[in-house]
Image 1: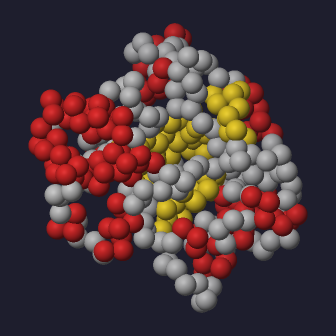
Image 2: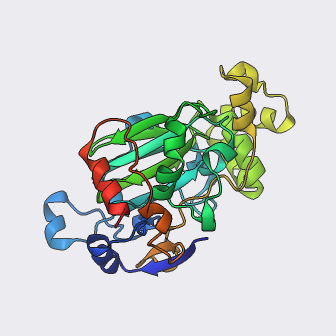
Length: 318
C-alpha cells in the first residue's frame, strides 16, 4: 500500500533522469495552480518567471463544461494534476472517483492505455498479484498476455498509444490502466458534464453527501435545470434507462458505488497539501523494486508494432 511522500521538484527530476527501478515513482502534482498565480506576458516569462501553469494551457473545448465548479473551490476534491513520470511508471487498473470523466493531454513522451467498459467484472481485470503488487508494469507482464489469449472470458479492451499533442478522453466509470513508455509530461483533469450529469450526481450523492449538499445549492442558483434533474434523482423518479441508451449491465455498473475501485497506483504522486504547496507529494509503494517475477516474465505483447514497447520490456527486466 502506498503512502504520501513529499519531495522538491529538483530532487524528483534527478530521480526521473537517473533511476533504474522496475516500477519508478510517478508524480501527480495537484496544487500546481497555487504557485505563481500572477499572469505574466509570454514574452517576459523567461525573465520574470512566477506564472502559474494554468496560464500555459486552455481546456479543450469538448471538455469545457465542468459542472463540479459550482460546488465551490473549498468543497471540491482534487481534480486537476500536472503529471510527470519516467519510463515504466504508471497507474494501476482503476476507475476515476465519483463517476467523473477525464481528459489527459500529453505534452511529451508516450503513454500506453488499456480501457475496459464499466460493466467489466473487477476481479477479472484487477486481480490480486503476489505480495500485493499493484504496479502497472506488473499488470502488463502477468495479466495482459492472458487477455490476448483465446481463453480470455472477459470483454476485449480498447487500447491506445498516446503521442505528444494527443488528448485521451476517459468516459465515466471506464476501467483503465496507463503505462509510461518513456519520460512523459501531461496535464489531466476530471470533470462532470451535462450529458452524464444524472448518474454522476447520484455517484457524488452516495460518495460525498456533504459535498453534494453544497453542490445542489449552487446548481439551484446557476443551473436550475440541472438542480431540478438532481432532485428527481434524489427522489428516485429519474428514468436512467430512458435517458441513456446503454445495456442494463452497463447502466447498473454506472450507478453502482464502489469506494475501493478508484485507487491509483501505489507509486503515484498525490496532490500537495494546500498549506504546503512547494514540494510535490509522492506516494511510494513497497521498496522491493527488483521483482523476480518480472525478471522471468515474457515481453509485453504490443497493441501495434512500436519500438518503445521493446524498451519497456528491456527496462523492466533490468
